[in-house]
Length: 228
Image 1 (cartoon, rainbow, N blue to C red):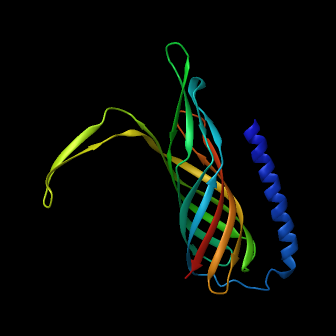
Image 2 (cartoon, rainbow, N blue to C red; image 1 turned 135 degrees about the horizontal axis):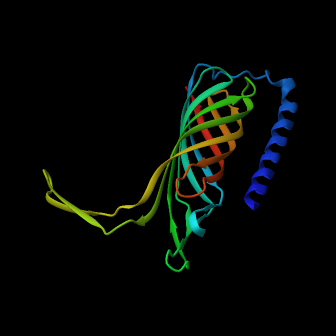
Image 3 (tube, rainbow, N blue to C red; image 1 turned 30 degrees about the vertical axis):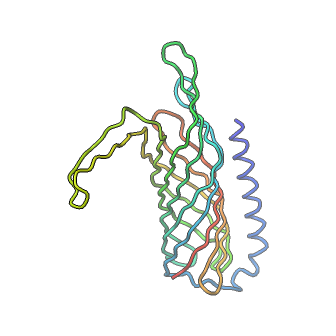
């Protein structure tokens, strides 16, 4: 309930801000016409995932903490308004997992860090065909989640190497999964005359888990990129 109220407040705030800027900029929207049409672009970004709780079965749950990460995008501008892009992001948030004993119902906590790798294919719509414009985004793809908790005893493998001779190494499997995910985002874009651009956005992503509620993760993104 608390998370839903926070999400609703953020959505209302961003919608009001977007509407205000649209009304302020509409008169002068074509003053600085963009040159991104029919061109590729790439960007590097830093992001901040917000804390969230994921409820599992029989009282189990995962409390994920806020964390910073990084990512990149590669896309093609079909025209001044429509951009198709691939978006990759990586973060390693800390989390507390609450485990429920199947025999007596007692709970146990595990504190660890997970690997969160997100790959999304997006459609981005820019409101104005201008160097400065608000935009909206929708997309879908896959998210890889690794708990970094061992799912069994360690193993080892040995082989003959042409340079190092007989070599042995160990490995450790962990609980991990790749799940379908999707997102919506709103933000602002500003282009410089030298083809550099900046983007700032808020994104809400959902991960479709099979044995728990879907994860709902909000994140803030800052990007710098180039049109070519």
